[in-house]
Length: 333
Image 1 (cartoon, rainbow, N blue to C red):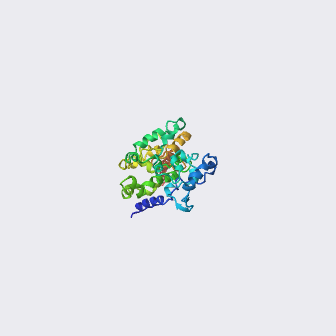
Image 2 (spheres, one colour; image 1 turned 90 degrees about the vertical axis):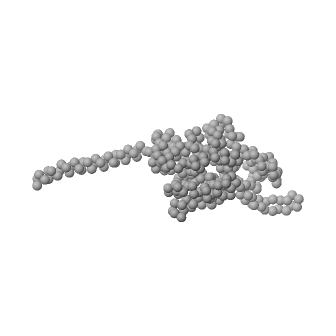
Image 3 (spheres, rainbow, N blue to C red; image 1 turned 180 degrees about the vertical axis):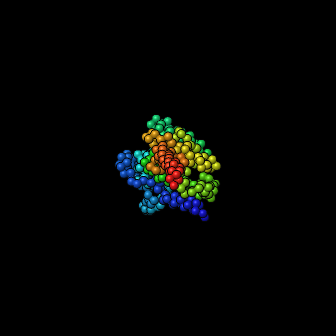
């Protein structure tokens, strides 16, 4: 196995062994918001008492026998991360079916229809700046929606219990790239999950990226979305996932002055910096948004031209001086 191929699989393996429930990463518990929540006590008593940990206790109401059982990982909610999410103030039953009030949960409750973003945020002027309607329209054109006939939903990527808008966070772009790519690999890096929604095995997904030169650097510096979505100016993060054969494979699409990365990965950062500093093609944002062949700083360019000009001027003066001095020396000799 050559070095590029080894680096590619090593990076994917690091992402794949991330512990379940580790996304999104949080440094501090949301105790402050928990104290402010009107429903924290109800959530803890009725839901998180079981779903907030891997091991829960169940008691037979007839015999009185108590046993401990393991909760399925996909049904475990980390309370600390939940209270740091944008939905921290909700009652669990605001979104989940009333049937979940009963325990054991009735079977029909488990087939509840999930809410989508527009059910709460659609056509609401309070959320107009986030353009949920346009995001939903892009999502419905994406391969995720069309290939699964709507079975794949927003929450398959953006868990409602943990969701935070990464693109607007203050964390570095490299941290955001890692988290967003981890989101993609939860399905595309797991053969069991992929088997539920697609006939394509991992042997058909991963090798398609090996054409990238210096593949490890690319996967660390670029989101999957930057090559696999249709670029748009209307929303902050593009949601129209395109088929694999429509993904970006042209180096100059990124490595040029009109880089697509300035319209996708660094859209928010470059806009903020253009507004503040006035650079035409964005500026270096915490040393994260530099793309070879794309970024352009007028100051650096001018400095470089001055240095080159002075070097050429010095060389020209030296030549002229030698041309003048040499005949004089010969004459004196």
